[in-house]
Amino acid sequence: MLSNRIQKLRPSATLAINARAIELKKQGIDILKFGTGEPDFDTPEHIKQAAKQALDEGFTKYTTATGIPELKAAVADKFKRDNKIICAPEDVIISVGGKQALYNIFMALLNPGDEVLLPSPYWVSYADMILVCDGVVKTIDTRASRFKLTAKMVEESMTPKTRVLILNSPSNPTGMVIEKEEIIKIAELAQKHQFYVISDEVYEYFLYDGRQSFSIGSIPEMKDWVFTVNAVSKTYSMTGWRIGYMTGPREFIKPISSLQSHSTSNPCSIAQKAALAAITGPQDCVKKMVTEFEKRRNFVYEAFSKIPGFKLDKPEGAFYAFPDISDLKVHNGFALTELLMEKARVAVVPGGAFGEEGNNFIRFSFASSMTDIEEGLKRIKEALT
Ligand SMILES: Cc1ncc(COP(=O)(O)O)c(C=O)c1O
Image (cartoon, rainbow, N blue to C red; front, side):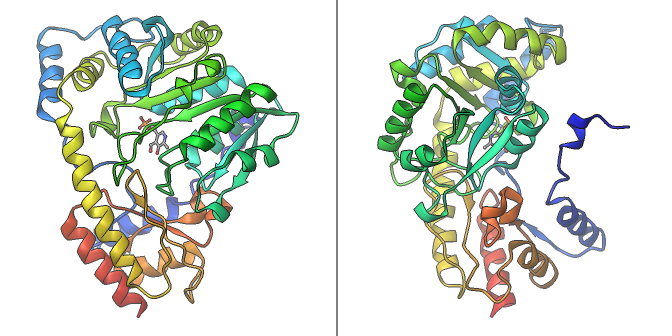
């Protein structure tokens, strides 16, 4: 008999679609995939070299559970340099991807019945992590403001049970960015009503049109209320290496360290050395990738605007386009995804996989080559017109 906890997990909404894509591929049918959540670039060479060196030097044993001191120091420097977040290396925890950092935080924060405000559409793992940690998901519908969360929306959604608010800017799946003025107002609400904020900044460098990121953790008065989560996964095209990191209020650091030491212990020693090279090494590889993604974003935006029935707000960050399909005959994201798979041989993700507010949308990832993007959008247009 499964535990009550594990039974709360919901089956992945995209499992059947992925299975179908694999089946068609096996039959030799050429499916173009736009469902991925990772850059299509290779991990930069100097990062791979650092991992090879770690191996050659026999850096293959347990490390401190929360990460090697030099990586924690590099992350603390990075927080100061790029985010204006002031924290000591001891306030940093290195985890197995951003995912483990988030999971640890929910485990440390939530008691049964605590409410978590989750702007929707949302990255699906938040909801399942919250459920497994006995929390209650309270979504905030952001459709009316082009998916851009405002302080007013937060204020209207708060209840006395609100314990945490999640910010994910730039957002997966919508590609939208929360405005700085709103973040400042949200910080005021958090202090006044004493709730925590988890700021997931894994897409922070994927910003277009010269936008700058703003971290809520940089507001000095928020020191006791913000957890900042990030990872090398997307920034350096290192999704498989599994290195994420976080900082947060000091009282949580030791308990979270204990939790991690009793679950996974340290993240992979070799991957930590690679992450150190990534964070402290040359950053032009990031700029190059983001420049390429901005070109693709521009192309995807233009192309969708020429397909009747699609309404797309220009993505401001991340690498996802999230067009509204409510004017199409097939206006349910799951149904359209199926149709595109069968008729256009194109795999996308139904918006409903990111909460019911996404039902009339699809997510199209532009972390694919320009050639595939051009061909994929051509196929979508032909299939629907
Ligand atoms: C919004 C968001 N947060 C966190 C993560 C997890 O990143 P990681 O691969 O470092 O665990 C992802 C990955 O898709 C994501 O989209």
